[in-house]
Amino acid sequence: MEYVQERIATLHAFGGSGGSGGSLARDATEAVAETTVVVPMTAREHENPAAERVLSELETLEPAPAAVIVPVRADADEIDPFRRWLESFALPIRVCWCNAPAVETLLADAGLANGFGKGRDVWLALGPAAEFGEYVVVHDADARSYEAAHVRRLLAPLTAEFEFSKGYYARVEDEQLYGRLFRLFYAPLIRTLSADHDAPVLDYLEAFRYALAGEFAATADLARALRAPRAWGLEVGTLGDAFDHAGFDGTAQVDLGRHEHDHRAVAGDTGLEGMSREVAAELLRVLEERGVDPNYETLGERYLAAGDRLVQQYGADAAFNGLSYDAANERDQLARYANSIAPPGPDRRLPRWRDAPFEPNEVLEAAQPWQASGPTGPRRSERIDTGAQD
Image: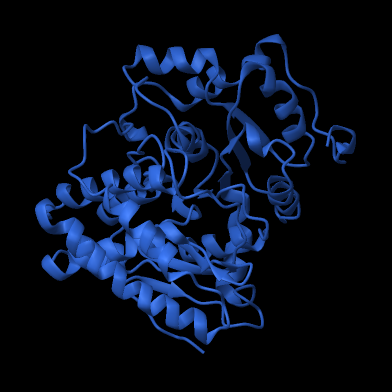
């Protein structure tokens, strides 16, 4: 059994109650009523089994969350059926159509129309989320193993006066190791930089067992302090702001067990290779802003050496657990990701919500054009049958 504490507080699921017993767990249960849950989705999540499981699990929370905001990126002909599906769940759902024409206009008028992606979608929801509740929980919609207890686990540290908590979990599926971008890019890059620089921010970033997990919780005050990158650098950018706002003493990470996710291909702009460029840019920006000056001429080569050592360690771990492991494929990924290591480009992060040029309610009004023709009516307590649309 493993009890190791990192530089940040690490809350383990030792078995038995699995984080569901004790006074801290009871406090977390009560805190759900003061919490906004944010679940970003794109058109591919419409009636997707993983997203269906997430929403169905959230229905079981007692008490119910203060709100569940679903920032959705979808085409105009997709948003109405998507919205009706979301509103069929017995939840206090607020659908936020992130690319609604009025949202695009609002952002353009404020000079914020440069680029879109997951980070921008989550940012649009964070402002309203911080208004609805004392706490904000954010998680992805593609976990086929999702449980409502994850909300309570992420909240538990916040009820103990921490300001930020991050989920971590095992990524072992189909008898092999996943979590590839974290294992093969983030971990060896941080290890390389830590060998050359004595910087607290590197100690902080290295303390997270799964820094690229999409699951985190924050106080409303911290949520208003996040400068979100627009796309896949969201998780790393969030850690940089959490370091400034919460620091080591105000940060915790929580064991969420074992997750099964959808998987991306490696190659191409839409695969892990493309994601690595955005993660690299935000990670290196976080470090440069906090006094780390990487030697980019040699960083790629030293990253590959650190990655090669980790491949040996992953291979031994896989063999010990009877898992299949393709070391050649893993080294091929290292070579692809190494091309992403370069000085960060222009800063296109969105502003902190406490400095935003418009109010959260303006976003919700712009993102809900259907409200202009009247309320949608009371939400049904029972689920509609969507089987005919499968």
